[in-house]
Length: 524
Image (cartoon, rainbow, N blue to C red; front, side):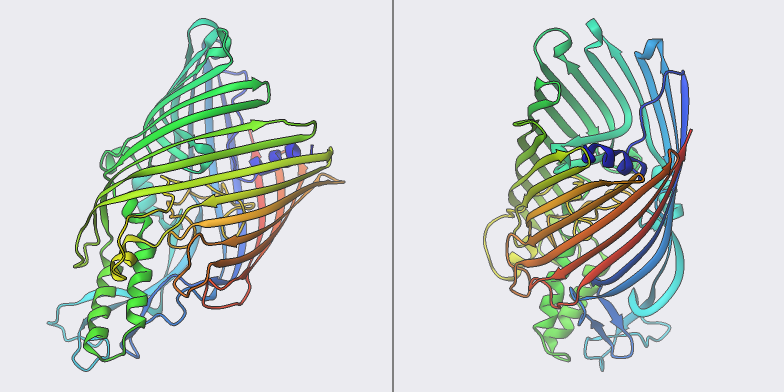
């Protein structure tokens, strides 16, 4: 089937490394190279313009940013198996996505009586100042997974997996894994990233009933676990193995977040609320100056939070007919934000109720061994953020679906999928743009061409669950195309081209496009 053959290519484009062989220790190394050109991406930054002494927000959420860059990841993985495979361990490290980026120049601001914003970059030496990003270009910085390489190395030691697995019990039905390893919850809707902790899997089918159980307790972060406040995630899963390739399962998970993860999800919405408040005021007025100072605090002081979240749902994979495969997942979430402190002079939000829903369905049909056609649907509930509701004097909690570290790759531009989807670190993100959710029907077609070339085409209609800041709900229509060629077992070459035609959610209609050239080398 084309989908099966293409999945092999996707693994070579940054996916999980294969299991270790029969030897006591095996090693694999990989080098992933990318050239990326991104055109007319929506602008999410708000910069201070020293020449006008105001914040430049005219391009906010407009398709107006271009970016062209090269990037690379070098990986090394060691796998060991002992005692007939009952005891195994894995140690994996990589550089993260390395790229050079020219940051914005920092601007020193102080109070200015003649300035329309009440802030000026012309400051006497004795004045109290704050530094924000300005419209000028700064120095080029080497980044790893989006932050300076030194910071990434200090926070993670560049470790991506360091785990020990022990298989024990009658017929080896129990497997205990301890350490840093990948954990997936709700098929990636809630979490799909590395985490540190304990993971116990029980294959009761080895004893009789076709049931698999899983219990896990982890600290879900890529950073070294002691660098953050303890925010454990607990997971319970039960899967019924209908047949060799079919399963239906239930799961429940809960997390007490003391590391500010919920506040981080709302940071984009917080900035949006501050920008809209500034756009409603006239430069030079008292209200405009006060809002400019508030926007400065929003940019400089990240929010903090304390929250409890829980999820429950089902997932499965069934073969209803020959050459058909149905996969699905549905999740409900609930919880409470005990406190949400913007740390910028705002009133602390307390006891905000949370609720949300998420669902994804895929029906893959393979009429021939070289073709797979997959219609799919994705839904992530959304809502106005607590900050915007307070600004508009609206009551109620937040009804958007919040995960821990979701990994959804339905399309290449809007969802960060494609040939680089597993190439860099996962990102903590709210559903859709600034938490407004997603409603997305789509179609994926995979074709195996002669000469070992795989072609993947995707199309999707993308909408927000609730209206955006400009009154519209339609994110747009996206079309993606990928070509992957594997001339040798250790070499994969790929080319990706994506276009998103923006809808009325954004303040502009110029097409957003991305082109990626990928080269992957992998071997023992």
